[in-house]
Length: 437
Ligand SMILES: [Zn+2]
Ligand SMILES: [Zn+2]
Image 1: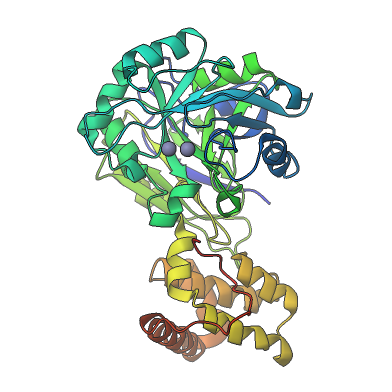
Image 2: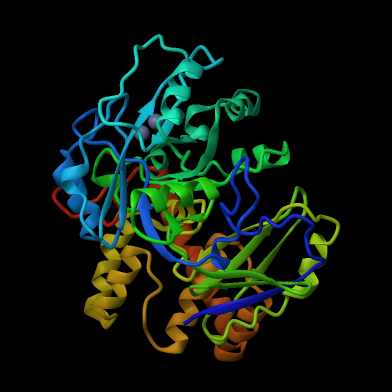
């Protein structure tokens, strides 16, 4: 199922609609208008060459067996011999995460270099200029890693442009563990300063707890090193933690977004302007998203750039930030979930419980799915969209909807109380939501 949103506004003079649709020094491209295929990549990977938990063959399998096409191996200050693992349908790229000094005395830069000759290495004191020049001359593409986790200010990030850094990590799965996965504000600020920098999502995987959560979809002619590097340099990619863009285009004065089922599509124009389009998933599978036009008026004064985020149906993942964590925080009290596992005994199908544990929108009757959507909307947005409210009122009546609010409010109360006293599950009981070790 695909949904389409139409947003009307005056055509931008320079068009940089989709996430990552432009490179620093190049004419903006719209990857959806380019020929080729989409390839799924994790561009930030550690192995036992540095501080990863598994060696390269195991790491390759962890991605190859789950639908990925590309893995860039980027150990700290070390390259890996990747050629033996390349196949026709799986491309490994030699890379390195390098750490030159930054203006911030308490933090070195973390720069992700993709396509670094095997064996290239630098002394600890080698300045940034020298190392990046050597790597770029050898064909590397350089990405500023996890700026939020590093704590870099805009002042510290902007000079990276002069050093040939070409992209920024907007999402880093490993940085979830201290709440700094989402660097979208940093990205926005760089854009606001006129640096038209695209963004990637990565795992920065060191261990199992950050596997396959953030990735970059790259549009390229073929799955070869040359074609993929050309696509990176052109900015022909977008970042995702789940939702999928299938098309982004301009038709006259309308921007058309086609995507996998989405709860909302958010458009970011230069602050404070933007728009949000909400879908009513339960009773509007076509995704009419009818408040798009009125909200899009806010975009009219701006004609320079726009980026779009998708929030997917299950609220598990979204393009650049981790809404799941917010939901877990409110709902993910392990004790409650263990107790609720007993719901199976009272007739809730195990498949529904599995979906809820996994953060997926469960399959069920239209009413059950509607209840789920209402609960998720209240927990995430603290409000219901007009269509969702109308659907819920039509299905359950005002009284029924009020009872749903009472029930979820009660569970939040219980969850908060359990959280406050840090009540734990019984020893040996499986915990539904993984926590940082
Ligand atoms: Zn790092
Ligand atoms: Zn790293």
